[in-house]
Length: 335
View 1 (cartoon, one colour):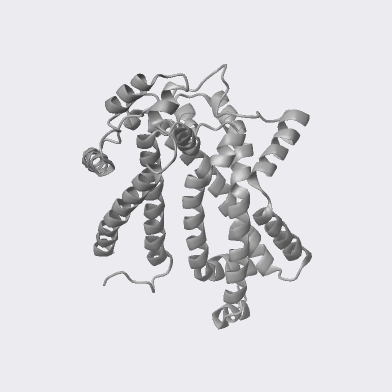
View 2 (cartoon, rainbow, N blue to C red):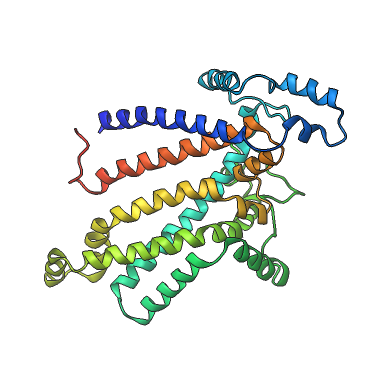
């Protein structure tokens, strides 16, 4: 297992290297001059040329790429062209916001999706099975932006139960320690702020969880139906084991591998694809950060944001692969 893990981690290096090259080439092909965008339309030609030299954008792209790699190997993500701030210092708060939102969304998706799939397989062809699968189909098909707007209309405007946007109450802001507000409020002993943060999380996390929840439910049902037809399941039931233990202990354990794959892929997709949810709910996450950087042609921020998302995505896939061996002892990574 250790040798396999090290080998997989080393294999990620060329993947990330290739990704940086592709991203660097693509973003430098984006129309528009960063100096012009940052300085504005009224900037003089001399001011634009001076600012371009200061940014180092007048050099050939391959020299800029080599300089970027040198800084990257030293742990330096560069400096934002727009804010002139070190990306290392400012990107964590956005990444933490997206990670918190994604973690809560995936927790909802896994708990609801897995159990809905299990119950649908347990009572296959029942009214619950039909209703659950229809809802799952609607969940996959429903646009996130529409669901988010409907949530805001229903629970914020009409009922007034939940806040419309943001991560916190602007009148009582959270003092950032880890930038993960659920943890920060507990560390500071502020249960009132903890409840406020949860209220801000409910609508965006539910909107973000809808699609992975539906996919997980359908996958769980499919794999559980196949496993529950196995001989050892019939034997367990013939021995008089309670159906609950047959389903959750025997069937789920052998049906969980494809579900784990879906969970890993969906987690990676949510980290990089939460921009619609973050925009609708005013969530200051990594997706919004990169989107704003694209608008301002902020090359270092775009490169760093995509690099971090790609690194997290491949690491999640590695973790899922390692979990296979823990869930199913028949899977060996010794060679």
